Image 1: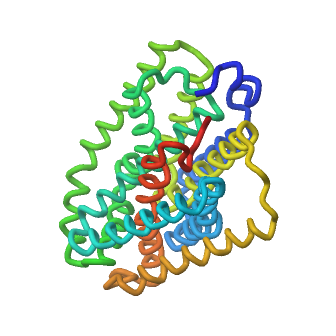
Image 2: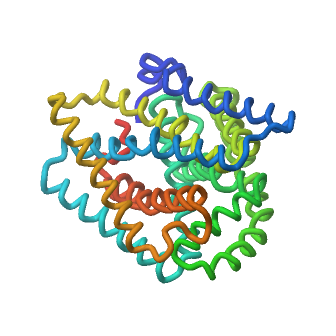
Image 3: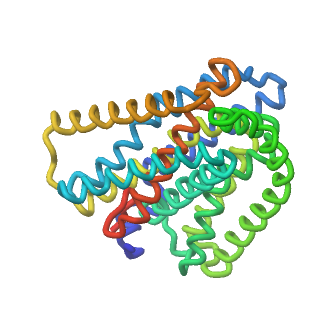
Length: 341
């Protein structure tokens, strides 16, 4: 972990462009949808779904492949081959789990979203904002749960109907009969999970204050955590998920990648090589999505084209996110996709 002097010299405690852009982006969307809600002019669900697809497909999809590219480009062929094999094996196993027990698999998918959003954001804090108030492994795990938990727990509490509907659509891709029991489980878990998440937020921020007082890193954490909770509470879940990853997750990880490259430079690759790898990654991603479309019993679930595409793409992202986190970060102890020197 870098020293305070290094953090201050390079990033001036959170003034890095990616941090500011992510904060302003989520704040802008929160204010806009807050005003729309107050004035009774909330966009139709069809419009919300289009926003989701634009955000997740057009804006965020290329970034996932870029994270693996940055992680692998200096590691060599034997390591890269093992990495890709483990990645594909994890995807195959996850798809099989959806066939066997889609409700359990969806729960694992939601847990993966928490891990991706939370652990990824924690590493961005390490590199760009400061995390000196998070002392000890337990405190860091709690911070990751709070940051990532906002993605799943807050929309469940504030947007229960949309949340349950699209969860049911996702399960229906593999087993339409499982949608009904899933909705009952979500309704039963909604308030208890929301209460536990609220306690986790209070514990996380309270322990940080007790440790470091009104430090710059704690104040930044307070503001960002509050912004995430407000964003997912005010913005409809379809839009909030669709814009969170490009405006927050990918933006901050791009800043972390630039910061790491400045401190730990690798030889520059020729532009044609970079483009070739990115195109190959895009084609591989498209092949994975096509394969899932072919093997899934009901690719669009039991609904129309637009909600079916949102459900299918969300399911696809969840399936590839599991190895993204487990293989790309947790098992890659030497570096990982969210590497910070």
